[in-house]
Length: 348
Image 1: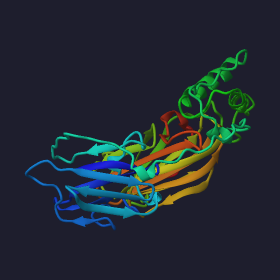
Image 2: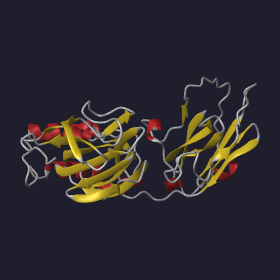
Image 3: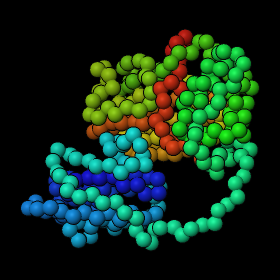
Image 4: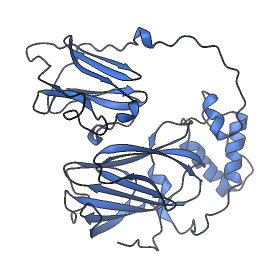
């Protein structure tokens, strides 16, 4: 039986009686699976002849798990060392979740409570401040996230503004006057195009080149990819590519809905490299499965993007997420922000 918990905003999986039924632990810790990290517990913990009581206690710097009153996991450390295997990634990385690997079970009671020691004391209210930029919005909660569409403007610009406002609906942009004015100004005052690329020339999707070999050695096939979140499992990404020991290069353009400082998150099994505007911002190559985070400043114009991924064996998966820093939760980067130039065929 497996289940997921959240430690300081990072999900991790609790595995009970995994492997051959006699190993338990957290998955992943520093990129290591439950059977080979500091939390590994040897010996069966779940009874076969009756109900089991599992208690998981999560704190800011630790996870404790007991089964039928016996300690199984006692981990303490920094939450940034925790991550999920790619076959357990769920759409909302703030949620608890349950996992079953071919073994049915029944839950007769589920209780969620807050440890007394973790309940914060009442803090005095801080005086509200008027935000002067998008970076200040973290201190400005609002129930209504919609941005008003400016009237009387060029129809094409209005349509683009509506698209951006719709995308960031419920993603953390409050509908107060300073915010709306700042966001509206960024949209309406932006240049018509990015130097070096014609907006009329690019088309949706990324160029996807597939190779045999984990280092982009032998080109095998090419296609157009709608996004950057793929769970290949044990399968090949293309009939012409081997099911293990392959690599992929996506190239094209990234056009965010709003300018600002973004946090890019990659989850890959196995390696990944990301270049934006020619700069290598993530390099997790030949390092096994894991997550990476990086802050980047992006405009709302198309900027060159290259993502390379490799699989060296077993399952293969890759997913790229982002968040507008301090303003929104992580979301899978949507397909509608990726473009390619059909007139340019990237080098193999």
